[in-house]
Length: 186
Image 1 (tube, rainbow, N blue to C red):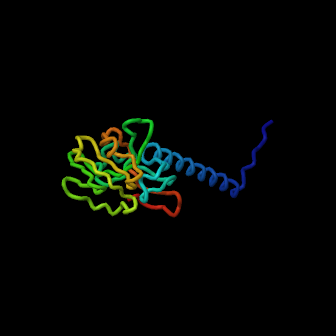
Image 2: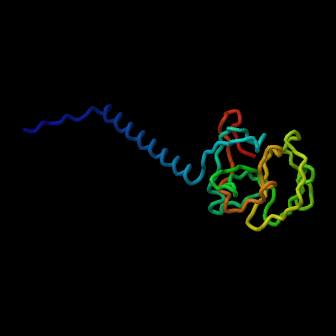
């Protein structure tokens, strides 16, 4: 004996289709977010004070992994980049690019001299400067001279030399936490 199934009322069918459409959209959004995080942007936590006041300790930011990896953009002077520490590739650092390949970088009593000209570094407050002196260094091809903005607490190219391009894997682009620091990383 066959039982006849009664059709569901139109309102109930509409609710089921709406729920399925909502789940489809949610799944699609999750897949897009995963693809973006894996291939384009990666959330990272800043650890340490070497980039203050630009980036604070424990601040959360997004880095763009795509821009340098696939040659979409070139590394520019003053970019804030994330790279594997050359002396221990298990660690990542974040610093500001000061010298490009072929540049001469020198530090005279805390003032950066780039290709013979003192740099205007308004992003480094006076209280974060140090009085160090560094003899001129010519940045090799495929390498970059990087420094933290908090010069008196930064371990950077002044101590271990320029960073080769192969170690640089991202550019800091957007701060998202804490909310009062929300915005583009400059």
